[in-house]
Length: 213
Image 1 (cartoon, one colour):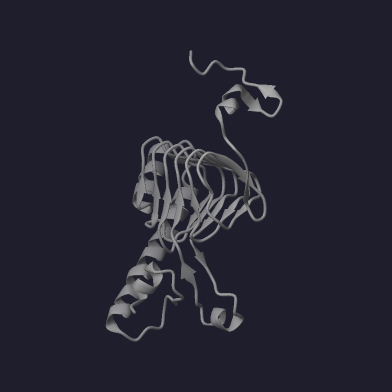
Image 2 (cartoon, one colour):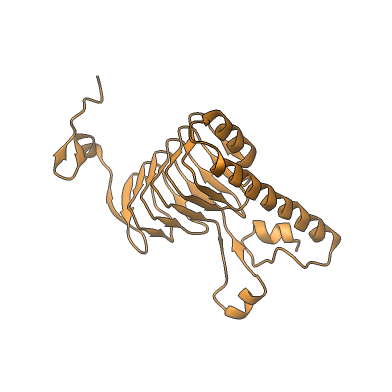
Protein backbone atom coordinates (compact mmCIF):
# COMPACT_ATOMS: atom_id res chain seq x y z
CA UNK A 1 0.00 0.00 0.00
CA UNK A 2 1.32 3.44 -0.94
CA UNK A 3 2.21 6.20 1.52
CA UNK A 4 -0.74 8.26 0.31
CA UNK A 5 -3.14 5.33 0.86
CA UNK A 6 -1.76 4.66 4.33
CA UNK A 7 -2.30 8.30 5.28
CA UNK A 8 -5.83 8.37 3.87
CA UNK A 9 -6.91 5.10 5.50
CA UNK A 10 -5.91 5.76 9.10
CA UNK A 11 -2.98 3.32 9.04
CA UNK A 12 0.49 3.73 10.53
CA UNK A 13 2.91 5.52 8.22
CA UNK A 14 6.17 7.43 8.21
CA UNK A 15 6.64 10.51 6.07
CA UNK A 16 10.15 9.72 4.83
CA UNK A 17 12.58 6.96 3.87
CA UNK A 18 10.45 5.05 1.33
CA UNK A 19 11.91 3.05 -1.54
CA UNK A 20 9.25 3.10 -4.27
CA UNK A 21 9.28 5.89 -6.85
CA UNK A 22 5.63 6.68 -6.14
CA UNK A 23 6.25 7.09 -2.43
CA UNK A 24 9.41 9.14 -2.93
CA UNK A 25 7.47 11.51 -5.17
CA UNK A 26 4.70 11.83 -2.60
CA UNK A 27 7.26 12.45 0.13
CA UNK A 28 8.37 15.48 -1.88
CA UNK A 29 4.79 16.66 -2.34
CA UNK A 30 3.98 16.65 1.38
CA UNK A 31 7.41 18.06 2.30
CA UNK A 32 6.72 21.01 -0.02
CA UNK A 33 3.26 21.48 1.49
CA UNK A 34 4.65 21.52 5.02
CA UNK A 35 7.35 24.02 4.08
CA UNK A 36 4.86 26.32 2.35
CA UNK A 37 2.58 26.19 5.38
CA UNK A 38 5.41 27.23 7.70
CA UNK A 39 6.28 30.19 5.47
CA UNK A 40 2.66 31.36 5.19
CA UNK A 41 2.00 30.91 8.91
CA UNK A 42 5.10 33.00 9.62
CA UNK A 43 3.88 35.72 7.24
CA UNK A 44 0.40 35.73 8.80
CA UNK A 45 1.71 36.00 12.33
CA UNK A 46 4.12 38.78 11.32
CA UNK A 47 1.45 40.87 9.54
CA UNK A 48 0.19 43.94 11.38
CA UNK A 49 -3.28 43.48 12.93
CA UNK A 50 -4.60 46.48 10.98
CA UNK A 51 -3.60 44.94 7.63
CA UNK A 52 -6.75 42.86 7.32
CA UNK A 53 -6.54 42.55 3.54
CA UNK A 54 -3.07 40.98 3.58
CA UNK A 55 -4.11 38.57 6.31
CA UNK A 56 -7.09 37.41 4.25
CA UNK A 57 -4.91 36.89 1.19
CA UNK A 58 -2.50 34.75 3.21
CA UNK A 59 -5.36 32.62 4.52
CA UNK A 60 -6.57 32.05 0.96
CA UNK A 61 -3.10 30.77 0.04
CA UNK A 62 -2.65 28.74 3.23
CA UNK A 63 -5.95 26.91 3.63
CA UNK A 64 -7.69 24.36 1.45
CA UNK A 65 -10.92 26.36 1.71
CA UNK A 66 -12.11 29.33 3.73
CA UNK A 67 -15.56 30.92 3.51
CA UNK A 68 -16.67 34.53 3.61
CA UNK A 69 -16.52 36.70 6.73
CA UNK A 70 -13.93 34.48 8.42
CA UNK A 71 -11.24 35.81 10.72
CA UNK A 72 -8.48 34.18 12.76
CA UNK A 73 -6.54 36.04 15.42
CA UNK A 74 -2.76 35.69 15.30
CA UNK A 75 -0.76 33.71 16.18
CA UNK A 76 -1.91 30.65 14.26
CA UNK A 77 -0.24 27.27 13.73
CA UNK A 78 -0.94 24.76 10.93
CA UNK A 79 0.99 21.65 9.90
CA UNK A 80 -0.17 21.73 6.28
CA UNK A 81 -2.93 24.32 6.01
CA UNK A 82 -4.03 22.99 2.64
CA UNK A 83 -5.85 20.11 4.37
CA UNK A 84 -8.02 22.44 6.47
CA UNK A 85 -11.43 23.42 5.07
CA UNK A 86 -13.27 26.22 6.88
CA UNK A 87 -16.82 27.43 6.24
CA UNK A 88 -18.43 30.86 6.37
CA UNK A 89 -18.47 33.24 9.37
CA UNK A 90 -15.65 31.46 11.22
CA UNK A 91 -13.82 33.10 14.11
CA UNK A 92 -10.85 31.81 16.09
CA UNK A 93 -9.17 33.59 18.96
CA UNK A 94 -5.42 33.48 19.71
CA UNK A 95 -3.29 30.35 19.25
CA UNK A 96 -5.47 28.20 17.03
CA UNK A 97 -3.38 25.07 16.33
CA UNK A 98 -4.40 22.61 13.61
CA UNK A 99 -2.38 19.44 13.05
CA UNK A 100 -3.85 18.75 9.62
CA UNK A 101 -1.76 15.97 8.12
CA UNK A 102 -5.13 14.78 6.81
CA UNK A 103 -8.38 16.68 6.23
CA UNK A 104 -10.02 18.85 8.87
CA UNK A 105 -13.51 20.12 8.01
CA UNK A 106 -15.02 23.05 9.94
CA UNK A 107 -18.57 24.24 9.22
CA UNK A 108 -20.29 27.64 9.20
CA UNK A 109 -20.63 29.95 12.21
CA UNK A 110 -17.98 28.14 14.24
CA UNK A 111 -16.20 29.98 17.05
CA UNK A 112 -12.97 28.93 18.76
CA UNK A 113 -11.81 30.45 22.04
CA UNK A 114 -8.07 30.89 22.75
CA UNK A 115 -5.68 27.93 22.63
CA UNK A 116 -7.86 25.45 20.74
CA UNK A 117 -5.97 22.49 19.26
CA UNK A 118 -7.41 20.30 16.51
CA UNK A 119 -5.18 17.28 15.91
CA UNK A 120 -5.99 14.92 13.05
CA UNK A 121 -2.77 12.98 13.68
CA UNK A 122 -1.61 10.79 16.56
CA UNK A 123 1.14 8.28 17.32
CA UNK A 124 1.08 4.60 18.34
CA UNK A 125 1.20 3.62 22.00
CA UNK A 126 4.13 1.22 21.59
CA UNK A 127 7.29 3.29 22.01
CA UNK A 128 9.53 1.49 19.53
CA UNK A 129 7.19 2.44 16.68
CA UNK A 130 7.43 6.12 17.66
CA UNK A 131 11.24 5.93 17.43
CA UNK A 132 10.79 5.34 13.71
CA UNK A 133 8.49 8.33 13.33
CA UNK A 134 5.31 6.27 12.88
CA UNK A 135 1.99 8.08 13.07
CA UNK A 136 -1.62 7.78 11.94
CA UNK A 137 -4.14 10.34 10.68
CA UNK A 138 -7.94 10.41 10.78
CA UNK A 139 -10.13 13.24 9.45
CA UNK A 140 -11.84 15.60 11.90
CA UNK A 141 -15.32 17.00 11.16
CA UNK A 142 -16.84 19.95 13.03
CA UNK A 143 -20.41 20.95 12.17
CA UNK A 144 -22.20 24.30 11.97
CA UNK A 145 -22.89 26.65 14.89
CA UNK A 146 -20.25 25.12 17.15
CA UNK A 147 -18.56 27.01 19.98
CA UNK A 148 -15.31 25.45 21.18
CA UNK A 149 -14.13 26.66 24.60
CA UNK A 150 -10.63 27.75 25.57
CA UNK A 151 -7.85 25.17 25.85
CA UNK A 152 -9.91 22.44 24.18
CA UNK A 153 -8.12 19.61 22.38
CA UNK A 154 -9.91 17.69 19.60
CA UNK A 155 -8.29 14.35 18.73
CA UNK A 156 -8.02 12.33 15.48
CA UNK A 157 -11.19 11.03 13.88
CA UNK A 158 -13.61 13.03 16.03
CA UNK A 159 -16.89 14.26 14.59
CA UNK A 160 -18.72 17.13 16.31
CA UNK A 161 -22.32 17.73 15.27
CA UNK A 162 -24.28 20.93 14.63
CA UNK A 163 -25.26 23.44 17.35
CA UNK A 164 -22.79 22.18 19.94
CA UNK A 165 -20.93 23.86 22.80
CA UNK A 166 -17.66 22.26 23.91
CA UNK A 167 -16.72 23.47 27.39
CA UNK A 168 -13.34 25.00 28.16
CA UNK A 169 -10.48 22.61 28.89
CA UNK A 170 -12.12 19.61 27.25
CA UNK A 171 -10.30 16.75 25.55
CA UNK A 172 -12.61 15.47 22.82
CA UNK A 173 -11.82 11.81 22.19
CA UNK A 174 -15.14 10.63 20.75
CA UNK A 175 -17.98 11.88 18.53
CA UNK A 176 -20.34 14.52 19.93
CA UNK A 177 -23.95 14.56 18.59
CA UNK A 178 -26.02 17.56 17.47
CA UNK A 179 -27.64 20.06 19.83
CA UNK A 180 -25.78 19.52 23.07
CA UNK A 181 -23.40 20.95 25.64
CA UNK A 182 -20.38 18.72 26.24
CA UNK A 183 -17.29 19.11 28.38
CA UNK A 184 -14.69 17.25 30.41
CA UNK A 185 -11.67 14.98 30.16
CA UNK A 186 -12.64 12.96 28.29
CA UNK A 187 -15.36 15.17 26.84
CA UNK A 188 -18.89 13.87 27.42
CA UNK A 189 -22.40 15.16 26.76
CA UNK A 190 -23.75 17.13 29.73
CA UNK A 191 -27.17 18.05 28.39
CA UNK A 192 -29.25 18.79 25.33
CA UNK A 193 -29.68 22.30 23.95
CA UNK A 194 -33.41 23.10 23.77
CA UNK A 195 -35.76 26.00 23.07
CA UNK A 196 -35.42 26.96 26.75
CA UNK A 197 -31.87 28.10 26.02
CA UNK A 198 -33.29 30.94 23.94
CA UNK A 199 -34.45 32.55 27.21
CA UNK A 200 -31.14 32.52 29.08
CA UNK A 201 -27.79 34.26 28.66
CA UNK A 202 -26.24 31.78 31.07
CA UNK A 203 -27.47 29.81 34.08
CA UNK A 204 -29.67 32.02 36.21
CA UNK A 205 -29.35 35.11 33.98
CA UNK A 206 -32.18 35.89 31.58
CA UNK A 207 -31.39 37.06 28.06
CA UNK A 208 -31.36 40.87 27.93
CA UNK A 209 -31.74 41.13 24.16
CA UNK A 210 -34.80 40.79 21.96
CA UNK A 211 -33.47 38.53 19.22
CA UNK A 212 -36.66 38.96 17.15
CA UNK A 213 -36.53 42.76 16.87
